Image (tube, rainbow, N blue to C red):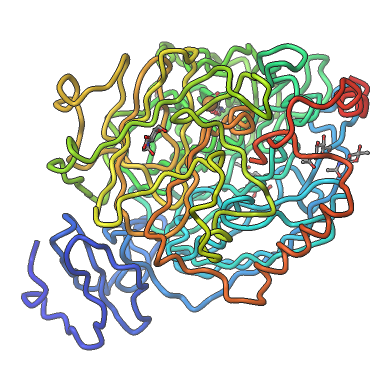
Length: 621
Ligand SMILES: *[C@@H]1O[C@H](CO)[C@@H](O)[C@H](O)[C@H]1NC(C)=O
Ligand SMILES: *[C@@H]1O[C@H](CO)[C@@H](O)[C@H](O)[C@H]1NC(C)=O
Ligand SMILES: *[C@@H]1O[C@H](CO)[C@@H](O)[C@H](O)[C@H]1NC(C)=O
Ligand SMILES: *[C@@H]1O[C@H](CO)[C@@H](O)[C@H](O)[C@H]1NC(C)=O
Ligand SMILES: *[C@@H]1O[C@H](CO)[C@@H](O)[C@H](O)[C@H]1NC(C)=O
Ligand SMILES: *[C@@H]1O[C@H](CO)[C@@H](O)[C@H](O)[C@H]1NC(C)=O
Ligand SMILES: [Cu+2]
């Protein structure tokens, strides 16, 4: 790389230079027309602004002055000064997305839509969303999946960790900057609520690693149950009526599908010959990992999660819950109807044979059910795409690994809960249970972290280390299920995965420290290990959990406490504190439903079977 001075770039106005390994937490000033790049934490380079380029179909790599596909999103972003605002109400209503004969069921929807509204912003914009809890009997909190929330942990939306749940009737305005670009979703983090419909997609426009003509927008692929997520969640608990989670009934694509009896409708997309389309695939399932393909049209992958990648082509994508793939489809055929397929992925322990279908039709062709076939050789193992190369090269120091890496075993088995032995998921021996009315950040604010319950499963990240390294290990007693592990506050640098038990002696040489894949959801293979790293540059309490909703309800979570003395807390007497007062008042009025899971379990099992019948009774299951 050329040096800054050789490029003749003025340093005037440059107030924040990153020094040492700590990556700057300060957004650049608006007047600062420079892009900072951190190839190695120790090396800071500055690139000249890209002046003569206009973002468009043939020039997707550039964005705006000084910012493009070569910008390191972790350290630089445009400060647009623009705010996009949304007002979203969550209501308790009914819906029947695949028109099944049994009729509608209870759904919890955002602005009465499934999925909820698409939030659209440009890279660097401020996103402001007012969330109104208009449900009668549930709290809520909304998480902006994958957004780093750099120095804004109070906006991460995890009740019991970063905020108090919003009581029925309460509202909160979340505000944060889109420091990264790409595709994501937002969803409730209150118990299993998102599975009943409290999800929406988010598009943050920015540069891309390959050109395309048209952005088709988000394509939300999700499993769906004819019972509610709470009913399914109840059955998933050992001691419930079954043991294993129930199977979903169908897969919805952008909120719709046909049902087995032929009712309902397929989602439809129209293509024009000769054009290239960007499709933003998002898996918002609660239980099912998906295998996604479009007959006759390979996918060119340009980005996964918020990480742009060197483009590569594949017929099939394995999409874990919470993961996103931005792909380009080339409409190289002149006529026809083609199946888009989203099937439960047997290779990733998804046991159901359910299928999601939608139809891509060429302009000029009459719409009909396609007769096309899927590509040969679907993947047979569940992987993290080890060959994916992030566009922005980021290397992880390997020297501290052996000494600093710590192991977090993921277990399944009896734990003692209120004197009873019940079967739950654990991380390092603890099944997480938090109190939605007493978040970790409250303990931080009150300086009472020494009294935080063990069930909060707080793990401290070293204050002095610039990188932190974690071995997530399936414990010997764990069933051979792959878990999509989601980290808040950071992208995981995926150093490696494997089967058996990880050891430095046996596996160090297999780890990838040079530009490893990065993303915010990574598979922990069944009977194996996942090794991740991340830079300790974002003070906060960051949840890391399995994104299978039943597993998070059953405690498969840990929280990393990072730089606890530098966490930006909400000032006194602000909305953040009011929501806690409102939640406490709601609890005093004896809510209809007691907390019976991680909140993300206080009381288990339900006192009597009546409780279960009350829950199950409501939809005539
Ligand atoms: C939604 O409404 C149903 C009755 O239609 C009720 O049983 C249930 O408790 C309500 N759920 C929430 C979260 O308000
Ligand atoms: C949320 O509401 C559902 C009914 O819609 C109920 O089954 C569940 O127990 C409620 N959970 C809490 C913690 O309020
Ligand atoms: C999916 O639905 C959203 C609206 O909810 C729309 O903006 C988007 O374009 C749709 N995706 C496709 C690929 O049609
Ligand atoms: C969504 O993720 C779940 C769990 O990781 C997976 O089982 C399912 O196959 C995925 N669905 C799609 C359409 O990718
Ligand atoms: C379109 O492209 C795909 C993948 O490159 C190829 O398999 C197919 O034969 C092409 N179809 C036509 C009509 O050219
Ligand atoms: C895991 O639990 C053990 C036993 O309680 C404890 O000594 C260890 O510090 C924990 N590991 C981490 C990373 O917190
Ligand atoms: Cu899991």
